Length: 118
Image 1 (cartoon, rainbow, N blue to C red):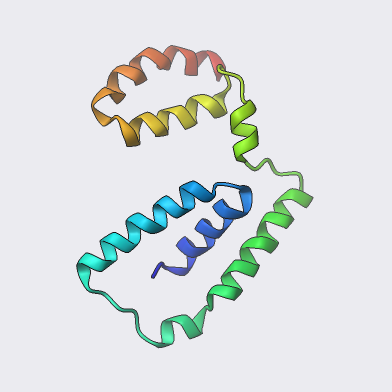
Image 2 (image 1 turned 30 degrees about the vertical axis):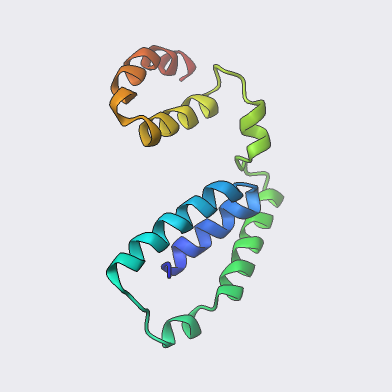
């Protein structure tokens, strides 16, 4: 079971189209929780039901869109130019999470690119 804010953020990821990433986080969290043999109090789900959190996340994303805030979506990320800040930061996280041993070298190589973009 996630904290309410985490549930909200995971729902927002799904709404924006990052289903695979949200599922990955949920899977890793469930594995972690299963090792702790943790069960939340019964009242936990009554305080902030999942349906309510899901609806709040939907309203939040709709509000951001109506206010013309920029939300990253898989389509935007896919269409990002190689030298865009969006692509560079996303690539940095990917390398950091998936190839930690090569991250420092990757970062040094791309730091000049980041300075140029800023």
